[in-house]
Amino acid sequence: MACEQLTRLGDVIELEDVKREPISSRDRKDRKGSYPYYGAQGIVDYLDDYTYEGDYLLVAEDGENLRSRKNPIANAASGKFRVNNHAHVIAESEKCNLVFLRHLLNMTDISAYVTGSTQPKLSQSNLCAMKLPLPSMAEQNAIANVLSLFDRKIELNNQLNDYLEQLVDGKFQELFGGLNFNATLSDVAEITMGQSPAGSSYNEEGAGIIFYQGRGEFGWRFPKRRLYTTEPKRLACEGDVLMSVRAPVGDLNVAFENCCIGRGLAAIHSETPSFALYLMRFLKPQLEAYNGEGTVFGSINGKALKSLEVALPSHNEVMQFESFAAPIDALIRSNENETRKLNNLRNYLLPKLMSGEIDVSKVDLTQLTNNHLADY
Image 1 (spheres, one colour):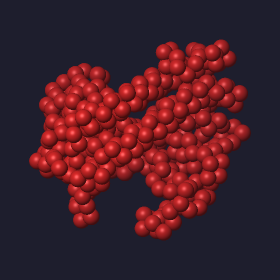
Image 2 (spheres, one colour):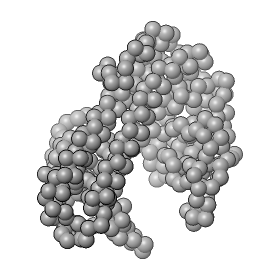
Image 3 (cartoon, helix red, strand yellow):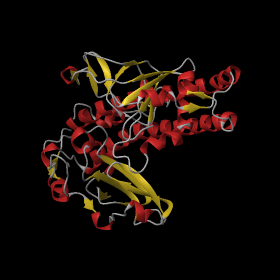
């Protein structure tokens, strides 16, 4: 059934912001532990104690993402953890399902409640003042059960990809970790430094080719599509390593498809792309020098990147590693592709379930196996 009545969010949620605590990076150095310490967009550290225990919803209080919406503004947190003062903390209540609310907030335009131009902010009062279409608790629970099927499969994909990447990292370290630097990066790969197209060519409608300006679009391994350009300058190929060359230097992603890269990125192209990727991951501590203390704006130019010292094994050793890593990287890509389909399907379903266009009582995904869920 469609939900036409708007509900004031503050009337149905339990806010627990009072237990938040800002802890400086200096003070956190002496309090390292195993409990997550959350900020506006996720975990920022791990500490030796906790102030929250249970299932909660964290909603960003400030930050550029409140306006750009590149990433979700509402994220689940469970177990034992701490939160700084950059995220609101919503506890479970009898009037609002947190899974349902998380997805509703992430699909809702909240710009009317966000203040500040240079530093966007969602105050506690404005969060509580939000008016949202909340159906009955029974309907919220039913919709949340459907959405949770997608959430669980996506989380399993993410966990599997984490494990697979660690497996290949370990293999690279085992084979090549003891080698001396005997070559430069230009001996291993072709380097393309990004160049930004004219701003007038940018669009979000899909005209032209996908465009990544810098690390702002980076995901766990693959960047997120946001902008396109009809006037590309520098291109990267599917499978190329994308590296941030400005503030901070050294963050890595892999091009999911052919794309245009802006001045914040470099593309690293190799006939052995898996070796190139894990080589760059191995070199990350070396790249940290370009983000050294006292540097106002960390960066690395093309000459320095091409002359970066690397360990280059024999051709046979490189091919041995590639034969091990390439199938695993292909599986990681396949999992990512499924996750994108699942996200799109979930985002398609939610407004239709909310409006009543799709009757939640007639949605049955239990017969769909994990291997076929993304085909729908």
